[in-house]
Amino acid sequence: MEFLWSVVTFIGQAVEAIFGYVEHHHWIFAFLAGGYVFYLHDRSVHARFDALDKRVDEIRKRLAIEY
Image 1 (spheres, rainbow, N blue to C red):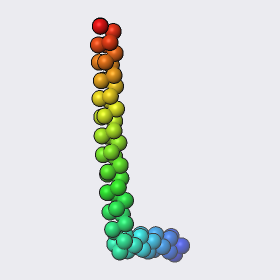
Image 2 (image 1 turned 90 degrees about the horizontal axis):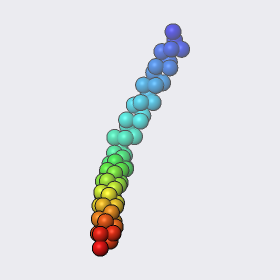
Image 3 (image 1 turned 30 degrees about the horizontal axis):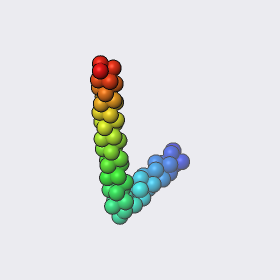
């Protein structure tokens, strides 16, 4: 039982150390999270433009065939 309690306290101390680090270095994680949000937004914007390019190419092909 003493071993189990020591494992639980070790895990608790590790979690407390992680929270302490995040509390003092929260700006690092804010930059990472903000960068990831911009990355996702950039991917979605590029996907939309790629879809528009495909549609424009398809329309140009159809117009070229009709003439």
